[in-house]
Length: 239
Image (cartoon, rainbow, N blue to C red; front, side, top):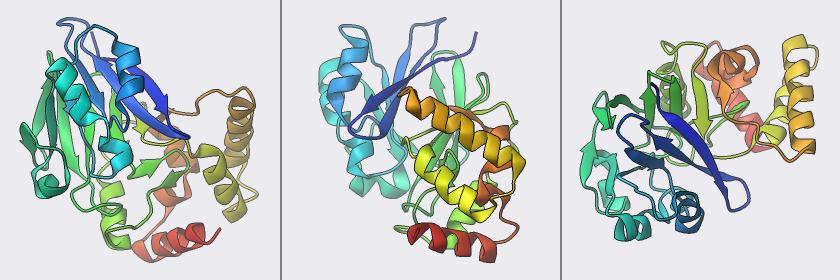
């Protein structure tokens, strides 16, 4: 049996992700920027592990309160531990991390933030990518270069098309407008944008989304080289 995954929306457009191993009952949360919504989802149940992709407050703000309430361990990148809550587990590229019987892989993904990491769980399969990859978009270059983020996105190339992209924000509708402005005649993209608009009109989440869909429609994943990627990122920043 694979991990059970639940999105926890909070603030205006953020997501934390709740993961449960049904065999052992082990529970983890990825990027709890606020503690209240996670506590509401868990109640008086258990929380064993808190996984952090990067140091921004809207991804770590609730971690310490959750540790205090549930006794959960906090795991994050050793490379950025000075800007994270005190870590119980120091993670590095290609490390493995267990949620019950399920093993996840740590993938270093700098670009949006130094020390940014993602978590890939093969059994689902699911990718918890923080602010590196978004539905129809990618993260801003706040602390890294276009080359770094381009290379980070390439780290996802070996993952199967059915991988669920579980990102940190609900940005799909605005990303869709930019993507369509780049390639207005792309039939697959036009259908994707229509699907996104329909979901948003019903106040439904647009993520997770299959990685294969992103490969067909996300302009940043379709960039052929870093120069094209950098130009797209600059254009999106000014869109």
